[in-house]
Length: 320
Image (cartoon, rainbow, N blue to C red; front, side, top):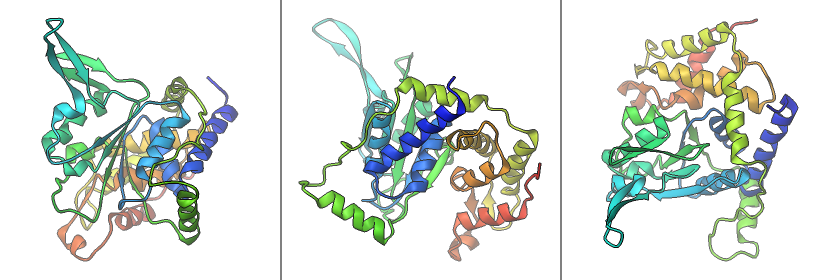
C-alpha cells in the first residue's frame, strides 16, 4: 500500500480535478470523495441546475471509471434499471442484456420520480454489489457507487423514498446555490465560446486507475480506531432515539455509517488515525436522512440539521 503522503496527494488531485469542472461546492466534493473511499452511496438533494450530473461525470473521469445515468420516471420498469433476459431467435438461446447498473458510477437522476417497485431495483446492487437475473447472480464492476438525486421543492408526482432505501445511502448531501463570486465564474465558464448546455469535463484529467480507488477503500476499512471514538459515535446515534422533537431515531446503520465515513475522512485528510472531530464532521450527511422529526417540529420549520447540531453540542467528545 502507498504511504500516507502518496494517498494524500491522490485524494487532493481528485478534488482538484473535479474542481476544474465544478465551480465551488468544495464541501460537497469532499463529502462525495469521502463516501467513495468509504464504499458508500450518496443521495444528493438540490434544485435543478446546480451541477449534480457534471459532478458525477467529473468524478468518474478522475479514475477512468465507467459512468451511467438513469432518468427515473413514473413509467420506468425495474428491468430498465437492472437489465433482463431475452430469447435470441437466431441462436435459439437465452441472452442476458445488462442494464445501466453495470458500471462504476451510477447516477440515478430524480430517483423519487419512479414508484417504489422501480426504486427497489437498486436495493440489491447497493447492498450486495451484484444483480440477480433469472436466478443468476452477476457482480458489478469495482469500485461501485450509486449517486441518486432528488429535487427538494417539486414534490408533485413524486414517490418518497422508503426508509429501507434511504438507510442504504451512506450520506445525504445537500447542494446549495453558489455564492455571488462562484455564480459569476460559473456563468462565464458555461457561456464562453460554448454552444448549448452540453456538460464539459474536458478540463478533468485522469488521476488514478479504478484499482487504486479499490485499494484506498481497503486501506480506509483497515484503519485502527479507538474504542472511545466508536463509543462516541454510538452515543450520538442512540441520542437520536430519545431526543425531544425526533419521532424516529437512527438505527444501527447510522453508527456503522459514522465509523466507515470517519475512517474515510481521515484518509482524505492524510491521517492514519481517527479522531472524534472526524465523527463530528460527517454526522450531518451521515444521519440527516436516518431520522424523522415530529410533526410539531416540521410545522415550526425546524431543519433536521439544527436538531443534529444540538445533539453534537450536548454529547461530550472523548478528550484523549
